[in-house]
Image (cartoon, rainbow over all chains, first blue to last red):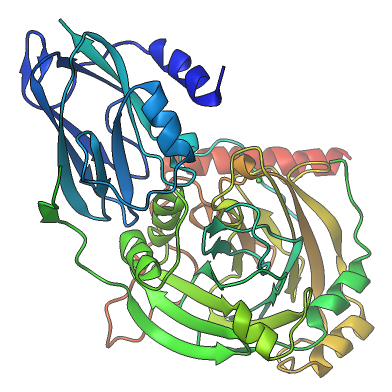
Length: 135
Length: 352
């Protein structure tokens, strides 16, 4: 099992916590993630399926971060990848130092996805979390 | 001279593989993040209310530009090339003993302020800038000047900036070093003169960019007129991440040799030489080395890195500028713990 897969299994053990931002009975349609000291403010977020979900990242650090939302395969590709910046694809956005950015994702099916920053060393430092997609 | 070694364990509170210059007591940041550090040496001498901080940047090959951020306790009055043999002479004096013993477009911008550049100079292939600012401001400056900061940089910079807003940034141009004929292992010593009430040595910065279990190795030499008291958030003990490997009066020949080196006129006729060896996982370096140079008081808990409000022992700047250092305030509970540890340590020594 890859290191990312093991980390994903470990993350599944985390208790579910309510997401920040606008919420419905089925989960939030806007998720706000504050970043300070290279840590996301949430470790688990709940979102509905088949509804556009806007992820907003407030980067309060003096260094850049990014937000990659998707399955484990996507996370592994970005951990090994070398793309310097993101923003052209849903669920992938670069968060420059001191800036607020957003990206919108629609999850087709209920289940588990992940969010993370894959700049060098950031994922290993702990910049990752779980997306629980509800029915 | 009475020696007190007070240690309290609890605390409140640049990357991989590319060969580059080693730096003592600074966080080293390479073009791809932190770089490998060789075992480094730092010398902190203190006399007449002035700390003389001498460290060497050793070129270890590689390409591109490298940078280092070193927190300082106060504004230096001088940054110049250090003596040619001071660090090497200290190594020979102490005969190192290893005890078994680191979607979209931007919507808003929040970081607007910039660190103030209060001193710029060049030493060999090193471009040196002394900065004044908060953690975010210094981090922003570093980012804008090509430093690629590791993920722990924001927290570490805040850890230091809360106590002193003064940092020294050194950019080592490896291409320039080769042009000057510097080879792998050649060092560029830098002598930083800082008026301060007590000497202070940053240690936590050595772990910048390292995983908690990554080893950190460094040697810190202290020369004070009296036997000093030391304090750190990391226990100073035989076989520990911090250990004393030399603790005795400085020999006359050593002092004569140091005084004869470039910039060594400040070296006193008598003194005490202490060597603190750093050898352990980065995660254990949670604070810094606080020193009471006269050996009569407990060192500052703020300077050691405990989570109490206050400032490093650097002197306030001239009246024309707002003083960067708030009054030192030590929490009553923390003070009681320190007192208890002090008493216990002293009793332990008397019983020995």
